[in-house]
Length: 277
Image (tube, rainbow, N blue to C red; front, side, top):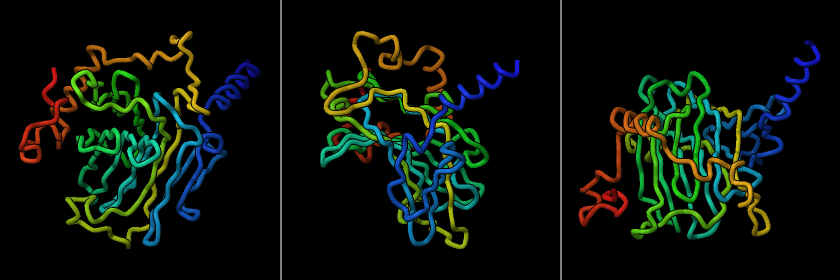
């Protein structure tokens, strides 16, 4: 019994994500730290600098999960980001951004999808829990048919591939995972009305359980084999009826901005994907 328990613990540890193996802290002059033998990562922001990291690998499609615990207390003016992005001036990008708040106010989740360097597809949400009290799982599913943003397994947004009607979709450029904690007090909280209170610094966000079930892109080739698609079921994953119902629940109760409803901004007509059925 003791041997099997030890084996299971060892196997569990071996299969756990390890930030030392998977992630490079890329900026922040020591403000980004990998701790607990690679099981925990923290990013810190103070008056002088924020910090950030990126994945060692590039991916062309994947399901990326990360546990985050956001900056607690008065985090006004701060932004914690977690996103996929390709290189170059016509980049693709899939964004989670967490906009800080005055203590007691809800965090805002800002989402966006870029293709060929063009975004303008923002949807924003509040959460049905306090994201600073504990770790929660934020997931990006990206396959050739759709992008799904999820929180603790509940989908909050779906962006479908509608290239058939002329809507660009990111599917040709490999992307890395990035994250950062930085000062954006000119726009982050109530459009910049609420500034960062540096007396509350340093601000810290924490990460664990990074998992990239994804097609690694290296030397112009993908690690995913067309001969074994069953290993990568997420490559054809879509929302089942239950997930569609949860998505509608979130969008009805917690969405606070939807570009597809902003007729003032798009006074010459909403983007094509907004009216597609």
